[in-house]
Length: 123
Image 1 (cartoon, rainbow, N blue to C red):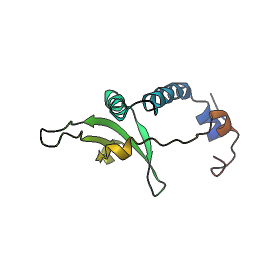
Image 2 (image 1 turned 120 degrees about the vertical axis):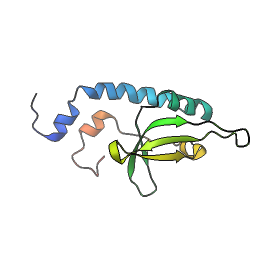
Image 3 (image 1 turned 60 degrees about the horizontal axis):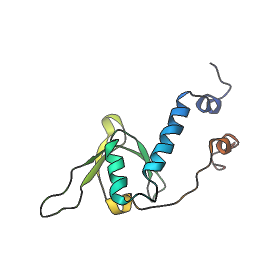
């Protein structure tokens, strides 16, 4: 299938429907009605699930391969690490659980709203 633009090409990929379903599942697994322990369990039970994280510098990073190393007898807090970036450039990052799983409510545009955008600023 040929497309007239890169935007049209990426919007018409068959994998988009799979991503939409995965995003709904991820949103349900991380919803505010879940406890921090439940959200942590949901993340570690699907360790290969990639998710995007934004920094204070307004940069986006891909995290994946979540692993809970657990606690120790003297320090019972969970120690959770993820891989940041992909491939040979991946680096291990220790998550600060309270801030990583703190609830933040945002509104994201729907796919139909994104389709109407003509520039990055509109998104």
